[in-house]
Amino acid sequence: MRYEVFGFKGIWRAQMETAPIALLAGHNMVGKSSTLEAIGAALTGTKQPFKGITKARSGEMLHHKDDS
Image (cartoon, rainbow, N blue to C red; front, side, top):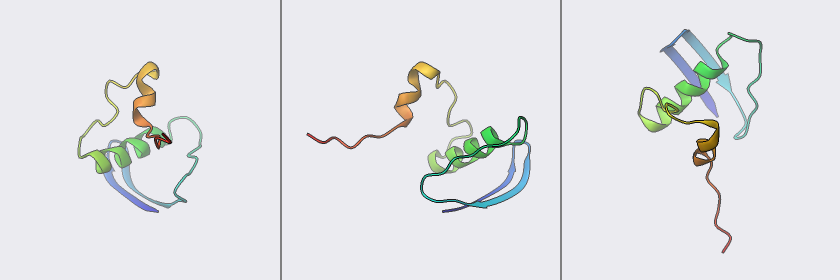
């Protein structure tokens, strides 16, 4: 998957390619959260896709196949 982020929060321009499942890691204050928020905003069409999501509600972001 290829991602390009332009002018989102502190990201002027960023490009990356990942596998369908990827780990985003890095030092503090380098834009990991902003990158994920930009991807979330693109997928949901909202400016703050994770606003109001607490640790207790984080499971709502996961989709599980129902095996029944």
